[in-house]
Image (cartoon, rainbow, N blue to C red; front, top):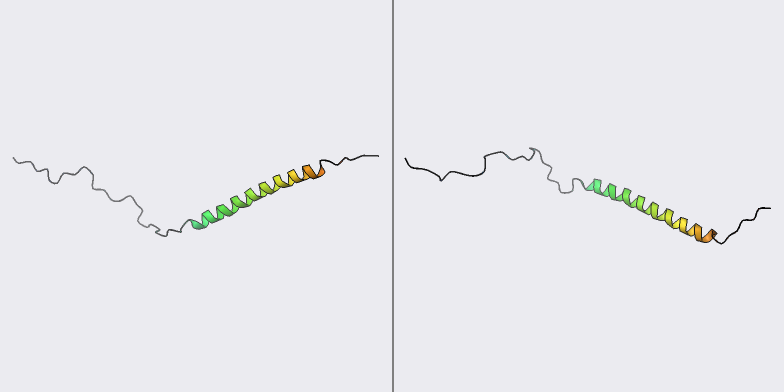
Length: 69
């Protein structure tokens, strides 16, 4: 009996696990990234502005004394 090893493969014959409908648009999630960037940027500028105003008020009003009669 003759052995035939020509058609032996290590991998299985399985179908691709990719979904049948695949959105091939490279900019599909771009609007989410833009929206997230706007929100994060707005929050970062708000925090920096609050810190800046706090420092300004501390230096501007630091030398004042309030005298009550």
